[in-house]
Image 1: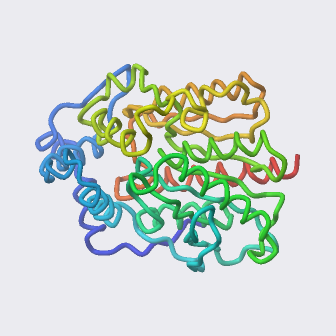
Image 2: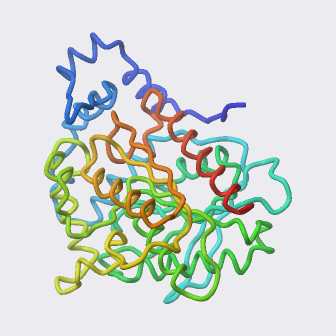
Image 3: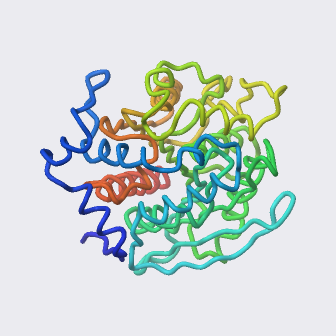
Length: 351
């Protein structure tokens, strides 16, 4: 049975426009874009064209508040709200202050279901549990897991390592309080998109090197894995595909100090000395994403180290597609990813 969504009128209008026949898309968006043997999805191309009319001053400014406002606006349009689950907000003790969480429990789950501790994207600077509410709802229902979304501290107010410290603390709290949450403490995974994918990978590595609980699986959605920013995909997709190289540099400058080594595994999990003990992984990337190559490289690194690893590149998509349910076929992709992660969690918990 498919997921039922509440689709507000603005979402339905945007979805209808993006579902126009190709001849109309051709008129507004131009000829198809192909790179490296991949062709950009035509609705994605139309969305990119439409985004050119946005206030580019917001995207180029160094004003953190403006960027956070713009992400919240885009998130509100990009995803409908999945029905069929109970959602509650709460706070837990964090390393420096209380951490807000949002807990998503699909209806009909059995006793002590698996859980996913989710870290939102946004370059460690923007985004929160509200901007990723739609994605987490869809993930919870499609995976058949309780999803716990973490509102970790953001830069530049709280620079590195505040975010990974908060995320590690949140994961440990969830496992330690599994009875209160009515989840299986042996089937708790971590997941995240973009910066959140980075944080999920970092938490998995930290747990593998420490005493205490470790994630049973990890779901890494177009993750940042190498702070040196030297891959070919960053050069090829430096501009014009939502996430730009300029923005990546800006986010990095907000997150870390100038003298912080880019090779630190808590920033660049790809560069860790040993990844052989980390949790089984699903890694998803987008074909037209500056982060494509480092996500693929991390999947290859895990696989070579003997970690059970599944990899998929959605060749015709761009960075951020996990929050682009408004695109034709976008919700089906998000639901597919949720199903895959739920299956990995259950198989890893039984192993």
